[in-house]
Image (cartoon, rainbow, N blue to C red; front, side):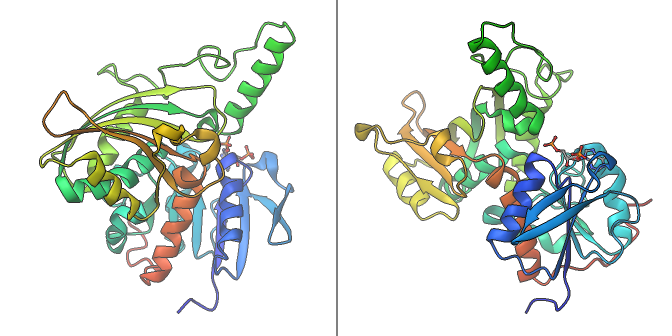
Length: 349
Ligand code: A2P
């Protein structure tokens, strides 16, 4: 079923997500016959542990994709914009974790539990959605199928690892400085993140929302394939290292009780219901860290409207929110026999 020769590259392999991509390929026994690691010139020669040995990081260039069949990108939007078209032109299928291609009509935006069928239209680049969007749609698609969601109001509590290594280092350094009675250095975020919450992720747009908030609005509609779903989002960075948490309120067309929602979600792919408030059991960021599932709890009816539900949704933003989802897309490409590109020049116009 799998090709005899399958050369797989990770672009941005030294980053927080890139390292997790390598770990995920390894732990899921992804059937590559050769693996390559690319990053910037700064990291060339760095050795990364892989499959019991090491991969030597190479500088990413326009020619890096010769002989590569599949590349998982997580090296920022500008790197994807510049290099993904070269990959496609040399016949390499790209799964891109940046926001560069997500809203491009030529690129499917895929969460395998939700819309794996969208892969069949790919033209070489498949986009991996924003981390906050992925866990939200994994939890909401089964409810949408059962009762049709009309409106979503979501507030996020997002970990610093969403900003990559530099976010993790900033929180670590500030906590150390504060415990040593030193003035914390503010370098990565506009304000101190240690013991603080910042209602500001990515840049502010003309409509006063942040780009992160608008990603949740637009990507949800594209992945759920329903232009009528309205989404209102507030995205907040919190001093947590791994896992994003989300408070989600939905209004549905048909009535769905909390009990019915719990039953539906307990059968849903990629979801783990964790909901026993009398025993203080609900999803926690520290429990979700390092895990694959999207955890859902605090499921309860919203008594202010006829058809409303509230829930608390938590997932590891580096795993399901990024690396794992990308590797699952790659596995789907293999399973659906879609690891080929029919129009090699599509992205180089
Ligand atoms: P490098 O480590 O050489 O800077 P994170 O999001 O954790 O900061 O990781 C970003 C990843 O993207 C790193 O692997 C980083 O490599 C890589 N990267 C950043 N800019 C480029 C570039 N211009 N070309 C290739 N890789 C890049």
